[in-house]
Amino acid sequence: MTDTPSTAVVMAQYFTRAGIGHLFGYPGDPNIELLESARREGIEMILGRREGTAAFMAEAYGMLTGRPGLCVSTLGPGSTSLVNGVANAYLDRVPMLAISGQIGTRLEPFFTHQVIDHNRLYAPITKWATRMVPEAAGTIMRKALRVATAERPGPVHITTNGNLLSQPATDAAIHLPPSQPLQWPQMFASDASAVTSLRRLEQARRPIVLTGISALRSDASAALVAFAETIGCPVVVSPMAKGVFPEDHALYAGTIDMACNKIVWDFLATADLIVAAGFDAVELIKPWALSAPVIHIDSTPNTDQIYFAELEIVAHVPSALQAIAGSYRGEAKWAERDVAAHRERLRQAYYHGRTAGKLNPPGGVGAVKGACPPDTSVTTDVGSHKLLVGQGWRAKRPKSLLMANGLSSMGFSLPAAITAKLLHRDRPVVCTIGDGGFAMVQGELQLASSLGLGIVVVVFCDNSLNRIELKQIVRSYPSVLTRIESTDLERLASAMDCDGVRVDDERSLHATLCGASGRTRPLVVEARIDPAQYLSQF
Image (cartoon, rainbow, N blue to C red; front, side, top):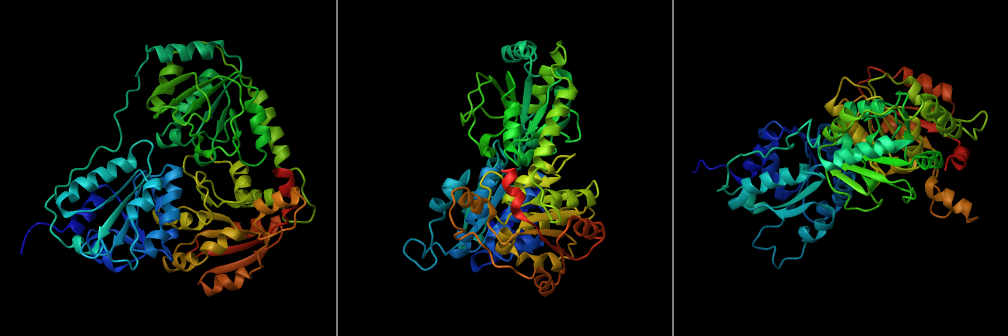
């Protein structure tokens, strides 16, 4: 017998030392040792109904905690099924450890059954794709954690050959790398970049801040508010960063590239200076067409070049904003009434085109919003309803609304809601999803029920893949591959040990959600919407 821990034990110990408390996955022979080691470390195991949704759950874990979400699959089809969720985390800039089992090392060089080259498969959609070996177990885990959390964060994929996990790890020391850099609140206070930024701000008449997920990751909310109030300039946010700037603030100016996006882009076009503060262009749906000069403030350089920035400040975002605002001596640039007038134009456009007597999509979002307590966490899926939630939901705190907007994969919001409720059982959680996305992941309802998670799932049903059907309509094409058969979601919910209800007007939807507090099992709301208003929104 040896006292040297196994490779699987070392991996599991790294998980817990890094504060990772949940594992989402689907088991297979090669990872039995890893699962048992994780169980003994006290990690809670969540069995997704397929690997892709398990990866979505892990992504939501990374979004909410800042720690890498952990997802595990078996070899072959398990590893290929995991791909979509990993790619989602890659473009959403979310830290993740994705682990796939593999056939034993003796057979791998020549055997073909269920053998996929994981490194080639995952290299384009991860920050690092590697394989575990006992001789370097500790070093590999240390690097995996650091790479996953370093700016910009993202997934790391590790292949685990089944015969290696039980072997002694000769590199077994647990040394956690720092996950956050040191922060200097007064950094570059006299630096040329700060001086130039101040001069530009002083000369500008109508500057606008555009902020995003890098600001969210760096907890820049307080610095953003102070900066906006000091300069007196409005703030436009990206969809995944909703709440990083409180949306009940007088200087909040909307969300970019969601519903009524032309109103927001036209507003940005009035600026004579754009301050891109922690804004990641991965969320842009429309091409950048602004002519105003840009100051780029981020933890990474402007390597994407989606927009041209003549000045780049590569720094901790809150510290940079604090340093600039702290030295600003000019006057407020905007009158709050002008920002309020813009928000009113946006509101009117948002509700334009309502069909009387129907459950209109914006009205549905408003009914959900009006019925939910202030501490509610909301997840939204991909589709026409996402654009409405992205614009119409007023987020007052960071991470209160979760969406995937980099890869924008359908089926994200239900797995994400499960994770949100797992992490905050005392907080109401509402999932908004279209009937198309719901059809992809509805099997996870039974998982939510088995875990006693009283989430509310509002399914916007129009029997259509609406985003694509709208484009067919505009071109006078018939609806091809965009119509979905109607499903009785009340009966489906019952079969999944959930409660179900059908509504077709705002009052019924609002009343249903008002009575949904304190639940111990999921409630599925089949919201029969009239999609006609979507034509006005987009």
